[in-house]
Length: 203
Image (tube, rainbow, N blue to C red; front, side, top):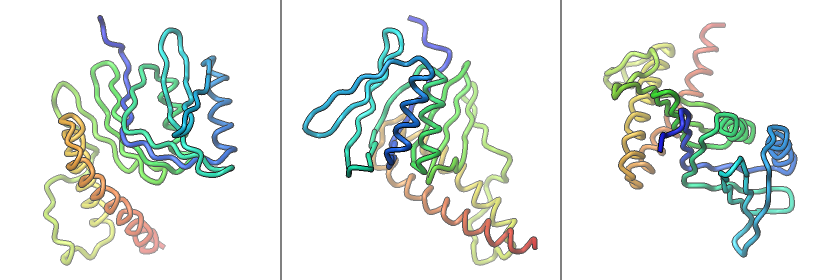
């Protein structure tokens, strides 16, 4: 059976949804002609998204009357519109996830943290292509005083760990995945703080 031209694999999704966000997400799905049903059990509820003969299950836990938690280890989507809806949901809810997108033979691995895309790794034909940041810069933070230089170093480190994360996902290495995600989370915070310093220095 021929594989679809587009596939998106979502790993480690964590979203805190308020009622208004959930309503908006459902409205978008219905507007895109997806059929929705709900399943209930003792652990929570599942939103079932139907598209033709395929269906996608999104387990949810009601944290309170106004807040719903979406905590999913892995889910695969073969429709680009649906993948975009999920990415929009992660962004608007300031959630986190690792998204591996395969489109016409090209792979993209995006890391979301706090609703923002921290970094994107592109792979094509077995080769790794990272964004235009200097690679192989040694970690000597004590010698780096210029905020703009530090910005590029952080971006290079993020891209490197994102490449490691892709390998951990491919190898189903759960421990490595947790460790690398922790490093990426710390680098993301450092990048945000450094950007504030950089903006302040440009004033």
